[in-house]
Image 1: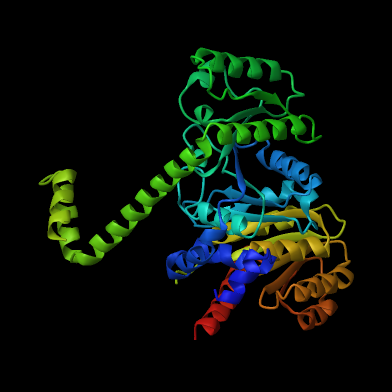
Image 2: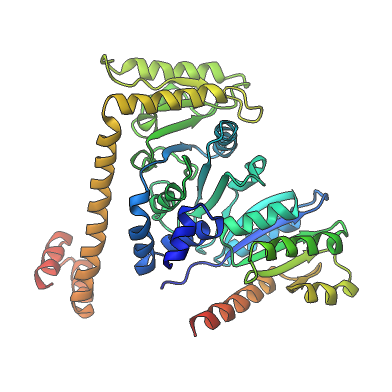
Length: 312
Length: 139
């Protein structure tokens, strides 16, 4: 992308934004150039993650939350992630289907992303796509993860405020005390709260929160009821997001989280880059030989790795 | 630069609510390794062009059964031109009389697929067309 395109991007031009997201998705030198050019314009948006099991109503909730911020004049960017087929490499990206209320509003930009083999609930380029929207001046960026099970917790590293969406009837109270996705929630949302078992779900989540020893100045995730289809409860969700944001600021946690995120990302990039260089530097036959030796149980995997690092 | 999967927007303009065909095609293109953005029924020309722009798609596929294609499709093409989406491959399918095919091709639709077209044929067509476009850009 040239300087003109970068300027257009930072001015919020939708075509420039769309192209830049494609570039960071492709990766490689062009992706690096885009990030290098926009990086100092990032760090302004409030990044909100929305995660939860398939069918809990994440997309509909995102649609309603976006409408809430639009009514207050804030520009909203949305990155919606859906899974890539492990067999064909293709994907159905269907989140826009539930966000049609936002069509025709130039203050909203929606981008669907496929995971392209990445685990953890996001695509590898999701963080960079969010940076593009941030640089383009979207004050709020919502990230919707793939339908998450129990362990897709990468969103907590990418968002400043994480919403975990539950729906009634998905599990008993033992599910609520398991480790994983519920632990990353800053705000818990019980959607489809007009259904019968909603109170039981809210009670199970509250009980789980009560089991955790409360410290004076820790954030306690609120448990909220919504009916995203009618917009019921959305104002309360937005209010709690605002409170959480203020809490992060007053407790110096915004910077602390930012640093933790940067450190994790730096480590990931270095790991990836070192591995790529190492593999480039080693004769392909050597790797094949080691693989064969491990397969024949002549070497264990750690010894083989040691040898590989040694020859490089 | 690595090749990205072909990105396709599947949309149903107009008022007919029968999206079975569109879903079958979406699913088939997924199985052919493409990323399919599915936007569903009752899309206005503005919505379709906006989604194509934001999603930076290679292909827009329109499904229509209502008979309003000669009214709606030119408006979609005009909206897309206005957004400078001239390089996006346009295809369509549904209930489209033979005598309209020439007009649609003239309008910019490279592929017009009537009832009975196999989904593999559609996937093959898209792959060939996009392969050619990408080859031309690279050359």
